[in-house]
Image (cartoon, rainbow, N blue to C red):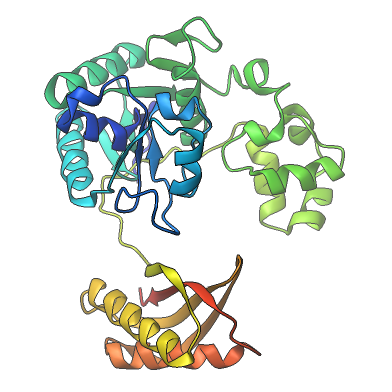
Length: 350
């Protein structure tokens, strides 16, 4: 896998909201909330994205649409339109691939570029200009010497000009040479890959800053977090990250479908029928690839979520076999209370 002098992380600004504003320019400047079918009066629909104007009222992704409506009653609510976002994303990455870089796409709105250009900031500015000129969408780019530093640099690129580290409009640079100067005194949860729970566990060991993490005893970390995760956390404290960028298409090892219900499911027959429907959907999605494991996700009212998983006796492509396995997993629950969400996930053979 190729190694590059520079890794760039490209992140499109407010991607979903920006796509909607391209179709509805009259809404510019107004608070916009996208999610579900766009009706905040319907139960159990959540925010997919919110514009900056809506975020100013405390609206956040994952929040129920009804809560968003209470916080921002003047918001415009729009339905989630996956096909439009797919098309817009494909257009962006087609433009980016015209540049002399290896492009590794991570989703609709972000990806990495492997670049050997001696002027990476100028390269990043050209990339930003090209994307905006050709698609009308804007982006920020982080420049680093690995994926970790590039990802974190993008966060600085979104900050006001003049903040550290080296910053140009929409572009910021962070390398391991600058690592401790920029990141050393910051809390561990500021490092990509360290979430609030891990940061809390680190704090229990009196490890609260990035520098303290870098100086931590690897044996202590391995004992607390395991022989793989412990050393990996210490490496993050030093700013280590992957340097490989590949343009090979990502092949998923699993696929899932889930559904939240407006009214709780109470009868077992109804729950089984919904599980079978989800199992058929997900089996169709994997397009003939062999399935090795099946898991179900059940969220009981009011909000307790648990999963169950099973390995199939033999790999299969038969949706009926997958559906039967999903239904049998219900027997692992001692009782079935009212259900508000169901999901089925399958793991695929290599």
